[in-house]
Amino acid sequence: MTRSISKPRTKHELMIAVWDDLGRGMVGASELRKIQRLIRERFGAGAVESPAAIARVLADEGAELRHPEIIELDARWRHSKITREEKRLGGLETVAAGEPLRLHEAETLIKRLEGLRAGDKTAVRSAQKIAIEARQLAHSMARDPNLEQTVRSEQAEIGEWFTVWIQTPGLFEEWLELRRRSVDFKKKFLAKEMAP
Figure 1 (tube, rainbow, N blue to C red):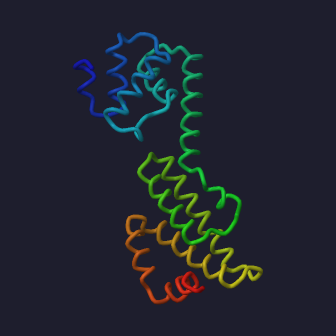
Figure 2: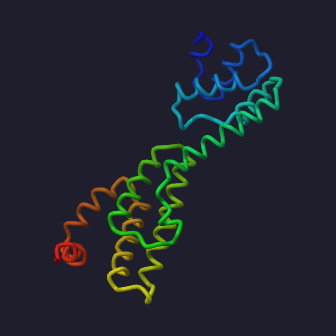
Figure 3: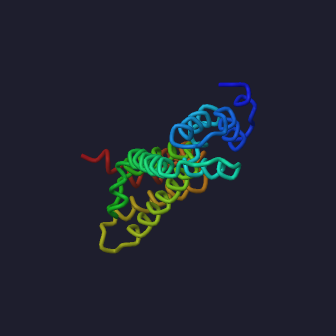
């Protein structure tokens, strides 16, 4: 990394500094990949912009773009990002299918959603959306008179878990530990697990 690249304080400045360092020539896939790599190294994976977004910044600065290369790279980058997101969200078929979660499944799902909160803005929005949908599904099932009372009780509990996580995700784990110790929780859920 040259001196000019080590000085920028923002992503925008870094993009331009890398292009300057490359001689302000035409911009294509290799240049954009280098800029993405340096942004990732400097600002973290969540800060990486799409190739098209970087190309727009450079075009505003006067760069000539190799459009077909950029379009292909952007399409591959977006596809790869979607594939990674699907892998991180894998196993959420139960929520998507509208089937009731069990307590242990709800806890696992919330832990996975918590992991997504450390990602970029898209991952955070995805986690929130999934949690809201899971909460709505649980509340709906808790009111469904066609389901057994035990299932409705469990769904009401799960709906409450998602409500707490959505409102105060950082406190959820401690809250859940306290909730599990409560007499009400033990009476409703642990007595059934211990029964022969």
